[in-house]
Length: 149
Image (cartoon, rainbow, N blue to C red; front, side):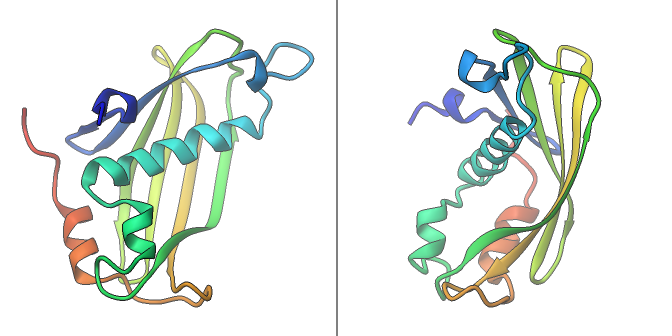
């Protein structure tokens, strides 16, 4: 697998570069607000992927019982617009790792300019959508810092 496609782990989280395409913009040429949700989701998914936790493995019960992560709450501040052909960096950091939830902070930047700040509460759920505790194996992986180069 090409890990550059998935971004890279940092000492305190994960970074992913994304390019803004025409399909991401509205009629004015500015990134449509809902597209930022896609960029943030990619950041969270690739963060898990590089940590060694795939959504498919979670759903298949590779860490015990089948489970999934579901966004329970999200707050977003739209600070500056992005435009077509911009290269953006999505940063993801774990703020809190609890027994049945994770709170992540995410930012989207263009260079040094912060465009988006988000706080995301993610719940651990069973296949039928009920809350459940995070398996210890998953918690241990998420708590582990990135390996030094």
